[in-house]
Image (cartoon, rainbow, N blue to C red):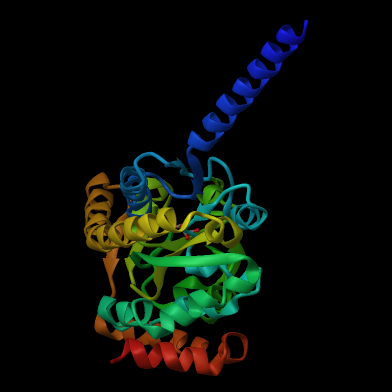
Length: 332
Ligand code: LMR
């Protein structure tokens, strides 16, 4: 009898040990949710991060990518990250205002970056770093900036001069700067989640929109927009962010490997972003569905005149110091 109960205890102990070691061997899962297609700069960089991270950690980390708003739309994904339902996101910098970090809306200010180099001076320097730190009190750690590109405007009517925007319902991301930008052009801004834009354009819920060509092409927006103006009036980029509690709780060696994988994925992303947008613009042209227009110098000047006051108007919201620091770095 005594032997029998000893054997039973031994079996229970062995089973517990086996299940504990199975648990110890279970990979750490990073759910990475995003709203764009896989064949965009962000989509491809997420895939590259997955490959690099899984290899560098010998499979101790598994990265699951959910593209195209499969799991969450714009606003929900940030809430899901804070709750820990997903661990990693790369929202556009225009989407941090509703979280209470309005400073990122500086990236939306029309013409604030004279060039890509000007942008990198910000994102790769101390100003970019200090902006990411503003996410920490929200339970979010910022890991990197990912690039997309300069935005173009589209609608079903030609957009040559600011007056052409009068009365148009223009879809925007949830940024007060973008709201002010569209109002400065005489349009009516409407906030919509990215996943809803194609249908809203198709059904006339909105008349037009803005985005870099890679986003327009991969969502087929050009099929429901007759005119596209190469305005390059503003910038679209991303912050790659993680749930802070999750990140701080990782074993130090794993976190170091993931940081390295992120640095490499970021270098890759920067290298492909412009090329992807150039290719998407070519594909839009080839489709013959949208007339592409390049602003002449007089039109460019009229757009600037209409949009430059937005920066001053937004000083109260974003902070004069932040805008000043970004402008200074961008123009160095
Ligand atoms: C948009 O909502 O227009 C874009 O920010 C989507 C994205 O993440 O590129």
